[in-house]
Image (cartoon, rainbow, N blue to C red; front, side, top):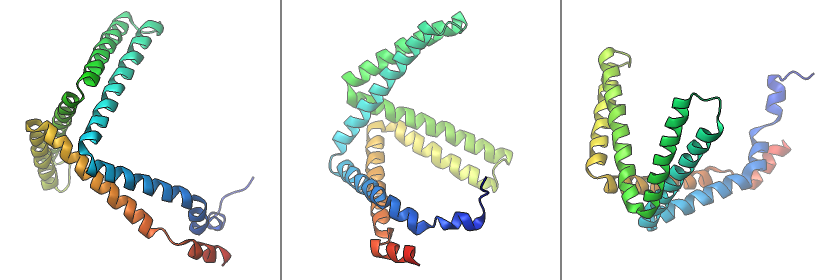
Length: 194
């Protein structure tokens, strides 16, 4: 039985790992760059894709709940009925989301807004109770989250559109920094030879 020591762990050095995973790192960065550019160039298509994925997720969740209601015989009957009702509702909402994807984007914006408002209230209360140190951080975080939630609630389509644009820009930045900070292949080979 081999016990890992600090010396045995350093035997697999970072240069070796980078060399082994170099192609994968480059591929992931290039894919991120392409997706970020698509998000910036075609924001409407990106939003449409998000709406379709969201609707498909709702349909899959509904089907899963319906199947669970019919085959999970160990569940209490009330829970089985609740699962079946939730499954039907999710299925209907998913079909409606696919029928009107841009309406789905607005609903998604509203859901995000409500979530941010709830998070903001929780942060603010944590600041009041002193659970966050320093306390002012809880207040600031709460106010910012509530303001962002209200903005998303007032303009859900514009809010989701802005999120897609910011996400696309961040995806491009991360992809570029990954590519720029990846050491060249010759440096990795020299480090491995030492």
